[in-house]
Image (cartoon, rainbow, N blue to C red; front, top):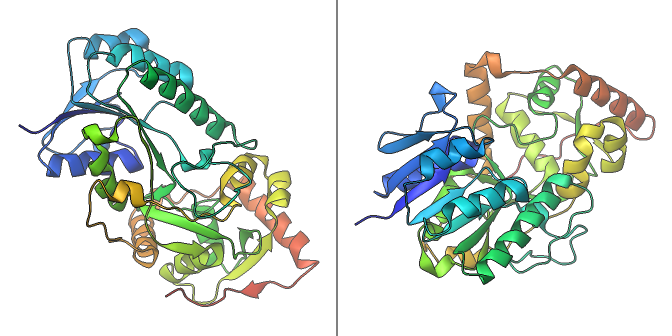
Length: 340
């Protein structure tokens, strides 16, 4: 008898891949979401429950009579939402998996690699502080008997996501011969994980009694500099020698405040993660989508969906201003070669 699992969400970048992996493994899969987007329906073999996740009664009505071996919550971003869900699923699930964030790990980072047991603290980003509050609530409930598991993804992407600040605007700039804006000096280290690679490891946690009471970081193995990330995107977009302008994260945050929290609270810091703990739950992981392949998939997707090529005029103007300021101090340099 295969486990029954409920995904709260199920159509996002990460959760959609996890749903597909669970279906492939033969699990009895149900997805709970608003059901607003027909093109984001879960794969064949998964059932759907429709509810407004912001409406307590709506969610209660559709889950009241159900029970599952595991519930995977991809949609709790505050402890208030999570508290509601804990009340609803107490006694109705053998495991409750909360999707937190690796951005919750302490900033500045005290040591590398980052372990599942590394401290949590983020003074820069409210999103991360909210995830930390959720983890603290869930840990407290676990001590009272609630079957909690915590999962911390880092930067997980699919073809629909350009994984740099500014999104497609940066690709458009490089294609038009304008400089892309790279935070810092471009040499800090970062980990990008394709969503299906994440899903392989997540399946080791799902409906696994050994994972109850534990926290797991899930990322791929590939570690890249930000210059390498921009260069791979440029090459995939047909730009052999992109111009990269390096600007401090603090200066970017001043010019474009909306980008500040995610930079200062996450991307400005070098990260290397030790994921040996989660790998032990499902051995055999190999990163199937390194970023030079992922970058081509991103560009191919956007080129075949021109309606997705959104140019943010405010960000574009901010990047122009930053490039102008930076050029007064140092020349614009071509990217430092292709990654291997």
